[in-house]
Length: 261
Ligand code: GLU
Image (cartoon, rainbow, N blue to C red):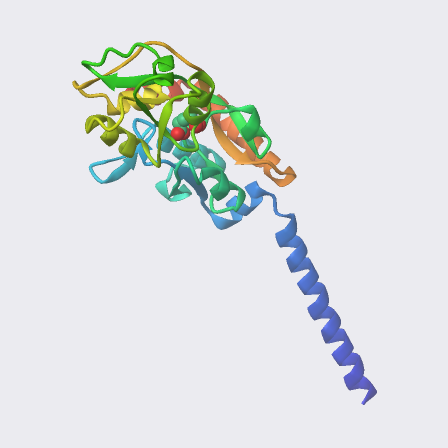
């Protein structure tokens, strides 16, 4: 009888200790270790922001997509499309998707700003844009302040454009849209008179019927966004190294050049 009791106690102890080490292992994995264990990087990217993230001939493509693929290859030290999985995010849900761990990182035309730095970390910048307005070609509008008294201005909600428009033209009649596609269609159908957005994205929508006014309302430094946590630091360092290597090998410039011809 005594023998059975001792055996039961030993079994309970083994079960308990192995359970503890399992929990400990999973609790202590940093973001980078968890990605390596999973075998691929999960990246939040946009699909409405040419030339950064968009569909061409049914294929997700763009500068952000290529940068994400390069980062994933750097993490796994080999070149394979299997190193990365893309999840579609938009300007309204991208921060939530990152912080709820739906994605490991965001490569999503995301500008660094002080408010965002409170809830997320940023890599070194990989691109600089300017906020400008796009109008119809025949329009007489020359600046954003015009909208304080006249017209309707489209901004994509959750973007830095939304913030800038409230600062520069606080009395404007704003039309908040969910995407650039929606804003562009409103301009096309004369339901708004301009779109405020990053010039490089506006250029992705530029046709003969529109023009972009060459006045900048803010500089936008695009960076990779990572969760703001101690266990995300090794991932942040690795992403900065990957970007430094891409810059050093001129790969970053080559990617940009391909999309800005
Ligand atoms: N770069 C700006 C931002 O981070 C606007 C472009 C975007 O929608 O991502 O809000």
